[in-house]
Image 1 (cartoon, rainbow, N blue to C red):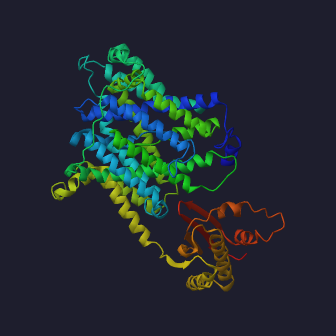
Image 2: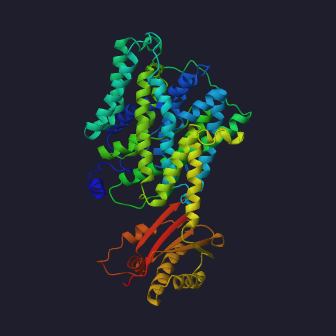
Image 3: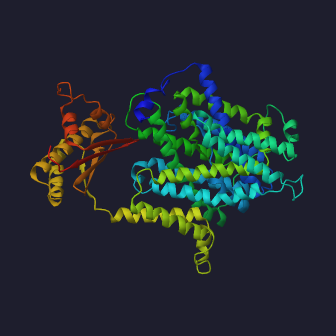
Length: 578
């Protein structure tokens, strides 16, 4: 089925209001699908790290409430926070390994400080999203995501091999329970059809818990004692602001995973827009920035409350795709249910009591899906030789550093805390290689001019020089100048803000018989790509759309990416005769 066919099946788009019962039912369905991941991720971290403060109930409570609140903000933005689409939020599995390190090094107060300050990095990433898109690429993000899965797998293996306290070591209760949970999740995810695929993790966890109960390793006594409504018995763990050595060497991996989480949210913000409207429209990157900002807000609140960071859950995108309901109301109900469940200690205790073998099998599947997501990300724009080299070199050097197989006796002591973490090492290597590859590619020539009509002759002169060096003939040069002129006029006429502060930066790159023009200016209000696509060539031209018709006829491709405070317009031209 094509993308256009999928759009036709949309029953309720993002701006429509379905019946309340339908919205509530779908919101609850998504909550049921994601709640295990929201709860089990912090549970696994505290179990593996051995938190001495017994803060489990508080951490889970805070995770549920913050996930619900940020889910509602994603649906109904507040200022620049929120995408305005169905994007459910939940605890991020990408932080498991480094969160364990943080809790072991300084307890939950150190983790809170790291989460709090890394959230500021996410805000900065969102603010400069338009500029960073060429360095922090899907190749870098996908590589780090795959390495996160590799780094966390030992934790999952430790859980599935955990010996239940009530049964002797010779018992097969743990291995059988873990194996059955894993097999059921895998079978449902692989062989079920349609929406049933999404229920694999939940079905496997339920069957695993039932089997664990039959073996006597699923203790429900604490669940029976817990209240239906109330606050957690544990208290806020606090924030460690002493900024000791552990904070500084752990901040680097936290910063890298935070940026990678922002890249994931960036992708989810694009994907949900493609599914949420009946007509194909250009991606609004202001909504993507809003999604990343809401993600950062969730992380900031997580740091204040003393729990793990959160991120967007792609499950909500799958549900929208399968049900055809993209209305914001679904997200609002879902967020409300998450907060409500947070104030239900009995449900929270039930999820916290899930045995280690079941939790380990669930986390293994989560990591498999995380690895697959990273793999899809690195191949998103095609896998050429350079990207493949970046991925492979970064991945295997990271594995070498993680296992301390690369000059372990010769590395300086200050680098050990950073390089011994494979995710950190691989992320740094991928960023460096990506920057080097971008420098190697054909040189980009740039020109900055005031956003006025008087600048157009300067643009013509700049392009004539570049086109001549590229070997373009006079006819091709004329088309290049005319297309650039129409793009400039669009930005100048629709520019917002005081004229004295406006400027346009033009970058041009010649490659394989084409010249790519990139215009960066202030906000233009309307979208050139959308207006060019809407031109009906069958109708007679009018004075208002003549320039757009000229650009549509001349350009090979027109892309207009709108960010807060900045527009990026890309016009690709080639030397072919008309």
